[in-house]
Length: 288
Length: 254
Image 1: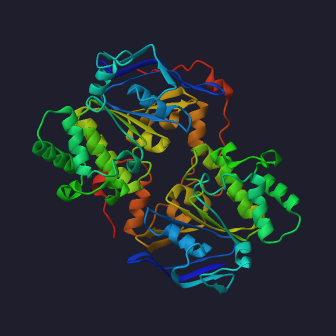
Image 2 (image 1 turned 45 degrees about the horizontal axis):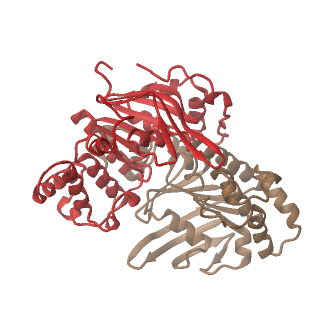
Image 3 (image 1 turned 180 degrees about the vertical axis):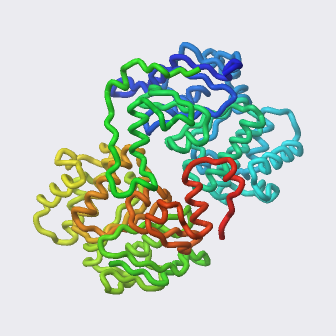
């Protein structure tokens, strides 16, 4: 990375106090994001989603986020007050969640929701916001934006709902987009189209993208770099094209456990987890 | 073993399954692959007796069966569902969950059957008196499989049995299904959106789109990357990972 990273995180820790003691969901991770597609891969409980939320300070109490550094374009996210965070969220860093069913307002047409996202951050009239929202719907390749604008969330399919979500998150033109399993609920062909939209935005606008997913192969084919997380730690960082040369036994185990079109007739190697992965220092967590 | 001929399922005006026909041989594992809305799960629900609004012919072991099934049918055909969080009674222990089918079918020796079923799915006796919320997703799916095999069925219907599980747990469950199939000589139908999972476990498969079977092929055909139909080709290519050029060439098939 030649220029300064968009986001720089050092020793990020997220803890939750529970009845049975403190659970550390993220245990001291370091990473940088530039104007690139960074993938974070892991199984459930690896801390990948919490990491995305921690960046936007969206970890609810009793969750506690600490870091040695969390800088976004010169702003220290650790000390930003609520008013400052409101200016960042949506406008500078925005987030797409997994399931549009639970993230859209069910009693408002999708077009108005997109227009609202624009008006929160730009002082424009209703007509202008509507025009921008229609443009944005066209940008995410919705065929008939005028018609879709007036639909309610229950009237759109999953793939279209996810495109609406992406339109809403992109209309304020953020510098960084955090996408948490944005395509896991979608069919493979729709997934491919949604990824192409994100891909073009990174290429055209120079947006940074953090792509959180459980799907190793998808991330490897879509992202530039991949962080592999397990137990709240980064096991290794790889160039996406070099996934097959992964060295860490966890990454290798995950790759081997995946059934493939050629794996018929034999048992899949089962991953054995080494408790040392949770304690040992992880060199290569930071890759320049 | 299973013969489906001209199966049609309609919900109001929506034709969810359109004249589907296929045959599954004894001890064969047959896959139904497709995207959402393709009708793959609806075929399975008609087969299992969960949906009675169908027309056409379904025969098991050469005997045609109607919409309403008797107890002997369920003794022979059992099903495992996608969501191990929704398919187990939250207030029943594993022991109660496994006892119920034995009681319904008035089978003897419940004690030994429960112990054997738990051993067979790799859980063992210490899980017997736990509630579902005390189990992980993979362990719950093992309980669901134990409940299905405890009646010693010859046919197992699997509806996306691993798609709610992590990759490493999916591998364990796929291995378990392959082992049970060999040990108990099961005939299986596996419904999945994941071509790799179907290719891993099945001998033959049907690709479905918009309620109809587009193409039937062997796993060898699939492995050679040689589907005949444009729809199956596109599905296969799309499941191999992201490809910017391909994203522009995608076609919607009706």
